[in-house]
Image 1 (cartoon, rainbow, N blue to C red):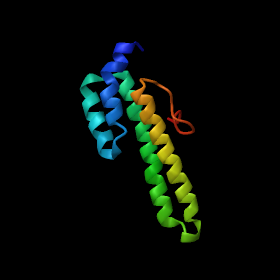
Image 2 (cartoon, rainbow, N blue to C red):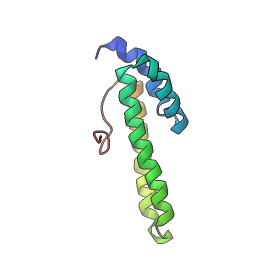
Image 3 (spheres, helix red, strand yellow):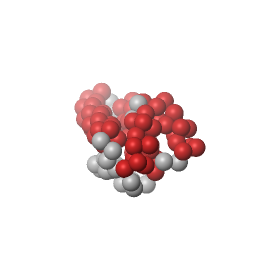
Image 4 (tube, rainbow, N blue to C red):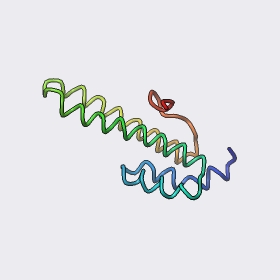
Length: 103
């Protein structure tokens, strides 16, 4: 992918990491442009969001004595989110660790 394609999709890629609403907005914005760089980061953000939602559901099911598990997973989600955002800002197309290549 050339540098100009990445530059064109950078804004949409960054928006994808701004909460679930940003992810939806980025998806809609990229629907007409179909930028591959933005599409990659929308996918990465979606995977991170699904993990975060699954963690939230899991935390409601676990007894409070096991809440440390949910906290650790939540911190992992935060780290993945930061890594994805940094990759989008730096125009890198690297999957986030662990969940980035799923799907």
